Length: 96
Image 1 (spheres, rainbow, N blue to C red):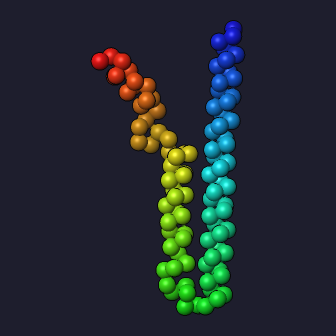
Image 2: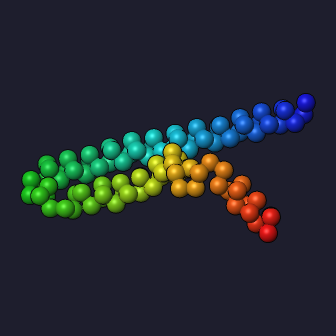
């Protein structure tokens, strides 16, 4: 019976961590949108020629790459390695 309770508690902790990671990504995405909109709008108000250069978009581009990496770490955990990749690799090393 104690093992069952421990597994349930462990699942709850994992679920809470997962929700916290997802929430962190959504906050990151919202800040990305608002900050980049502010930068681009500020450049447009300042001088219309600024929008023709790549300067206002460089922040969005590089930050967007970081945001995509953050999204992959949150939502694409099994994208490259599969669901039980770690366990399979551990078993390979233990069997040698």
